[in-house]
Length: 218
Ligand SMILES: *Cc1c(COP(=O)(O)O)cnc(C)c1O
Image (cartoon, rainbow, N blue to C red):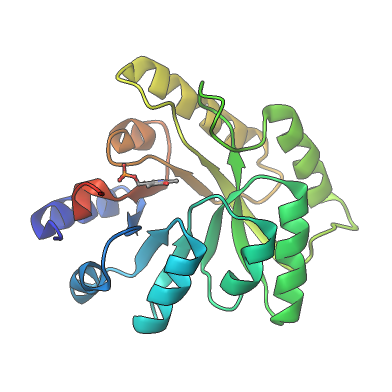
């Protein structure tokens, strides 16, 4: 079930701040997505390739699909024809594959580089040093991924009650975003249901929110 009141409040609040709301609909039915679509929402986020491909085929073509999960190279081809933004790009190999599939589809594909900011070992992403290496390649004349548009950065904070730790992690990501300003970054994707306020306070301009809108997942 969709919480329409929460949606209206959230989209008004974020809209007034120029922050894009990505409604994370993973594991939720197509009917939930349509309920928000009918209220005018167009940006939806999914984590699993097969589930996304399935939903995309059943839903209106003007939905902007964000892939926010961990993407395996061999699955890029399924998303390439329609994906709006790939958030979790965490290796140079994946950038190469996205470029290859973009060429096959005669288009450019937008993506974000995922940065590892959390304490947890399990979260994917580049570290500062790797990010600097990728930024250097993006600025090179013979840029190796000409049909990939790297629009910005994405990160996930630690899952903790310690709001100061979360604030520090988001602030660290914002500093990296600013530091790589010569690469024309415009999107900073950070913040989920439980920490989006801190993320926005720290400079996020795109939040990915699921459970606040669609209820808890099974
Ligand atoms: C599931 C997920 C979200 C949404 O999480 P909520 O806590 O339900 O808002 C956001 N970002 C990523 C990467 C996710 O996997």
